[in-house]
Image 1 (cartoon, helix red, strand yellow):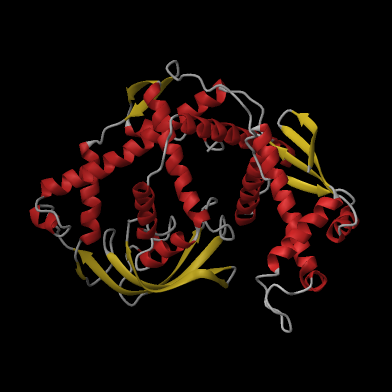
Image 2 (cartoon, one colour):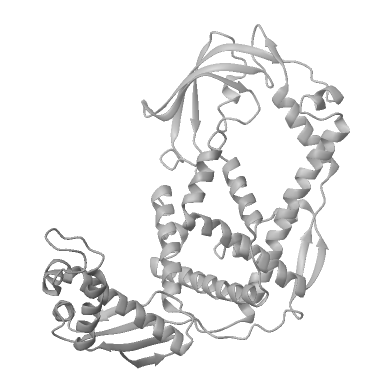
Length: 451
């Protein structure tokens, strides 16, 4: 087998491989010879099948395996001899096309093909002790804990039947049918639905028009769906609802105390408050962590510059672009609606793809240098967490991951990335900055497309 490098341009490589037809014929004979003691053919004793008969029965199949093995062998030889770290699977171009394959299959011509591939870039990671980061942190306000308690109480509040007109705070049981231009629309019909007036459960204006209604009364409620309504086909549309009030109930008193806490499995109101506070703080800490990670990725993106494998960038761009197109189809919006053009959007998202590939390669390099590993226990815990999101189907979800290594890899990847982030953060200079909850939760528009 002759291997000759024909291209070395940046991260691109190409190698011409030639396997003479004599070698092909020899490999075929060796494979057939290995088969003669294993195959069972009527009329012949084991090991006594004539080579010509074997060739007639299995020659084409065996030669196909010979050619595939030769390609695989060439790929391994190229990688090992040149100490390459591949960015993608090699592509193979057979010289002579179908005719070249035919001659190789018949061992009447050499097997000649070109192996094209891209390699991973080499770059120095260096140290991170000069990377300065600011971590925004916020504490839970006690007033928010009390508000959460009140919300929980309102959801558990008892109601009793009421005669006469409904007021804000009362609960109505209603049937309704929604129409646009006199025609019922999908999802606009309901029966026996409980609605607390003033809760904001329905679109703006709906509940206000039911204040004063009594049990057995029917009303026509006219509203306009918000421009940013989640169902694009309803957004901004005028609609009318034929509403029938089945019952009216007045809210009863609910005492927020130890007995209330026990209904949530807590031994006292203080313990319930502690649990609420802990949950809220955990959510704030998660946002703080995300902000710190964003700042780190921005700093690393600005810090490192090296050539990127075009195939990886193209794959990432195609994934992003497909998502963009799907979102446009769902929302009905165009690039013009976003005050841009397709060309400008493509350029922007290609930049995002390049950023992701660059940071991904950097994370992989740091992880390898620091010997970062995701343990089986960590992976199992993450899969269990996924399964918990599907009550009653946990076993099915678990079995799915056990049978699908690719799905497991999708679970492992973010775990690995977070551990690498932890490593880098531990080496960087991190300063905590106390901020308000609103400031912490404020979304930076510049962050949105980078992800």
